[in-house]
Image (cartoon, rainbow over all chains, first blue to last red; front, side, top):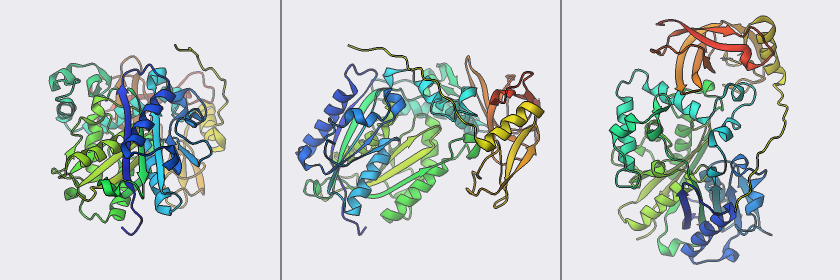
Length: 349
Length: 136
């Protein structure tokens, strides 16, 4: 790459927890303080802020207005993304690559325990053709899963084993048999196949000037794509948007063969069939370790998920010198309508 | 401490000119209308003001069959069966409901539209689809 570097200089994370008793501002405060502390800087070192939030989840219009002060955005440039935090991170990285700013704070937050999620996600669907029918995100996930399971007799067993494997060794550990015995929520998906919805916040400091001497991972490629909103306008069994997002990122990073390019992948998958869609669309191979900490199957916060995957990737690279390149992923909207990826490469040892 | 609230705000959503033609055809004639793109030939349903495949806006309305093939489905306990239907003559699929819930569903099964007896230019004027055959 010829651009100036963008380092994942610091990370701060809150949750995911089932129900955080604090206010959103207090959750964001802990995440931001954690990220600044991780780099050893203060708000004065931040040039600009990009936040990710979704109004309907916060029960507010312009939900970034509620966190202006706590993210340090008073009298500073702030942009807000109403999508997954990975899209906000890409926005921030592009600001740095453009030369506009040296150091950008990325913040994502959501507290889905505030309201019935199914009701909220129905309001996120098209109001003329889909919302009145009762279509929500879970409906779209079920339709996508069934499109994959049809003609694949082993799909449900395989998905149960995958969801079980992701939770192995965590407090949420569960056997494949127990998953297959859990109730259907949107056939063929069962309750224990789904990533649990929880509250959380995440903050990441991206910088061209901080982190280099600490061996922090560097962003070497980004890609972002949107598929049509209506599942009827897509191929239901393929994440074409992720294919396009990955191809953009691979082109920027100079990756010709993704099957052998990554030591680690941290996807934002809410169901096991989504992980199969992710692996196929990203083109990663068997040598890539996927979600070693369980990924979103041990706790998922909408909006925050992609940024949390970016933080997990950066953390793994800082702890394991053998992890040289990672693919972090964010997704949002019904059945993965929005897709974004970031490629990280390890800093100098 | 918490404060409880229930957000209730009346809204009026415009279906748009293309969407209104679709809804009026459902209500008045029990017909399902789509849009054929002059640029790429893609036939979408419901009617559109621009092509979802190529974004061009040179479209003409076409009447679609009330029959098609099952592309996918999902049953949500207590809420019924949702389905993607590829109507004969259309590209892509229409996301709607199955009225009945057969034990065995399969990709490619034939389905037929059923219309509501009382119609009001609303997506529910199309009551849903019933399975009529085994398909290819």
